[in-house]
Image 1 (cartoon, one colour):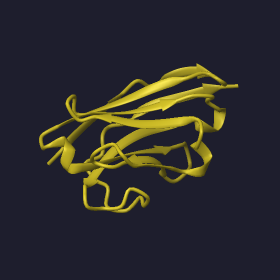
Image 2 (image 1 turned 90 degrees about the vertical axis):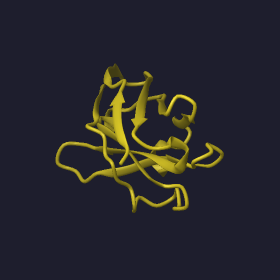
Image 3 (image 1 turned 30 degrees about the vertical axis):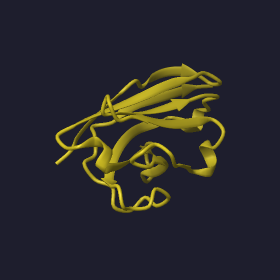
Length: 124
């Protein structure tokens, strides 16, 4: 079982930046695809980005392409989400999750071991 802990959320003005981190423990980090999801109040959880076990492949939902960057450091058991040009509609609780490395990075299915989430609030 992998345990995931997110951090780095906060309040930022529109156009600003934040970097989220998610530290993993419990199993070999490089065995997993890592993904970021978000959930805004009253809305369903949305798949935002994912990265392959090696870090060589990344996937982004259209609404964040060109603004968000996912990266991982397997030596530090950490996955990051660099968020630039933030918009009020990016406001949500952001979660990281993982799935086994053989699974596709482009689909939201198969993810588990959810962290507790970190709140991102973008003011207009």
